[in-house]
Image (tube, rainbow, N blue to C red; front, side):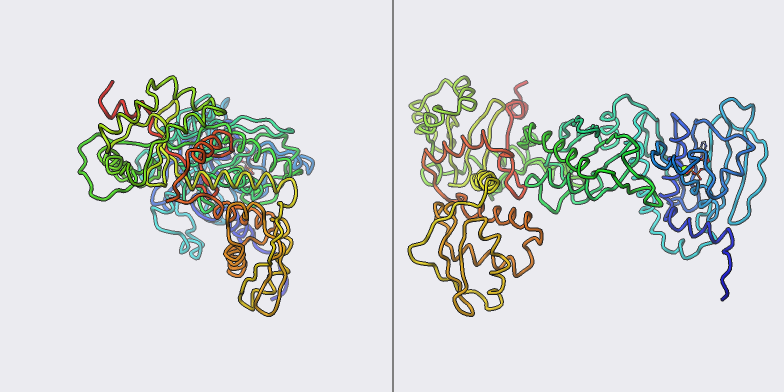
Length: 619
Ligand code: ADP
Ligand code: MG
């Protein structure tokens, strides 16, 4: 075929391929136009997942009759003029492509009336046929109706998913744009039923609660920060409402929904150790910065941007989110329901509130009966014991915890012991109780705390290691006799690769033969915690062999510290001395992120006095 110019319809449809991927992209472009037109009310209606009908109505500035044809012409825009304007774009649209692209793959009608015009104008287009604009009745503002999307591009139409899936995508887009523009009222009608009504509000966070659901409010922390020209506002979800999808993770830059790898990385980093790495936090961030510092002209749907200084943005997000989480009390609370549920014969720990969507309230709540039963069945003579001495040990240097305990309980150790004799099955928690050699029960100003001793100690060990490794290689201890470890011959060559990592954690080892390694020096930390060199190194090598160790050296170090912390930490089933218990509780007060272990599981659950009062009918 000789070289020839493509017909305008083909050009537009190619552009549409990038801009209009599915009905939700049409909704996005039309809403963005309404936002750019300074609308304060935007209504969206869709039928059959947007295939049959998409209608977006706004009360914005409108388009004059004589500009209607241009509005749907390709590369025609009122938002930029020269290439200089591209350097600092303050509107959501600027490419002048959306209406032309949409018109090329649908039957579109546009009715618009500028605020000062007497009447509206109307223009229709379908495929490559564009009608002429005519006066028509209509209120101030713009209404774009898109019917039979992809009627002339059957391949695209075939790729559309089911009606509910497309409708869900549309709902998400409307929710996102509504989140980013709290001062605008949004409504969405799906097949004639109103599914979203977000009235204009003054604060971005109010809109977040409206859209994500008011029930999340108590799980959200407000963030507000300003760092080297990047202002950050929004909400940061506590780890207990993390989800399996990134859907509740939304970032806006100057009102634009963006997806940016570096910002996502900063968020992940800020939550590292607080949530399971496979889950995503609930977080909505509104970033504002000088439009000149960001290039939005890098993606056809404008979903990605390029920062002039990515490092600053990454750092600002990381520190804002991290600070916010650091300041918060992240101990999850129990959620109980009234007595009356059937008693169970097994002894599961009562579930704590997860907030996960899709679970019925009864499924995720522990019944009081279960909870009481759990404590009733604890056998104090065998695995659990009260340490009143812990109180003294703690009192020495942890005034925060004990001050509250002292105030609240008039009982001393003698009282505790007497009560234990009278009622051996349920023990009063005046001090600290270790149950089943696994959990520690104590109290704080708000109520009852149940601590997973391994999880908490793991966090303590991890933070200690992280601090130490920040200062240089970990201290190492020379072994009197080298420890010989048998490894898989295939693993021997890993030794060279792992050497820098081993050095950082204080391990010196060399290959002695085709399948043996001699360890000459071992990490003092692990040594003191009686971790076997053979066991540790074999596991590390296995991790490296199975490719579960990160390629990035810093991340691999992090994972190794994690492993060290886990190995060094006291285990479930370890009986703790009063000093050890006191020590652990003291650490809980000082260590960072004490509410969760390095893998993101909770270390501590709280049952508040308010909850207890409620459950026991004390109003
Ligand atoms: P862009 O938004 O990139 O400029 P579009 O194809 O989306 O390109 O729109 C073309 C032009 O039509 C816009 O620049 C704007 O002037 C006008 N326009 C589109 N939608 C609206 C609307 N809802 N209200 C007012 N003007 C609009
Ligand atoms: Mg546009």
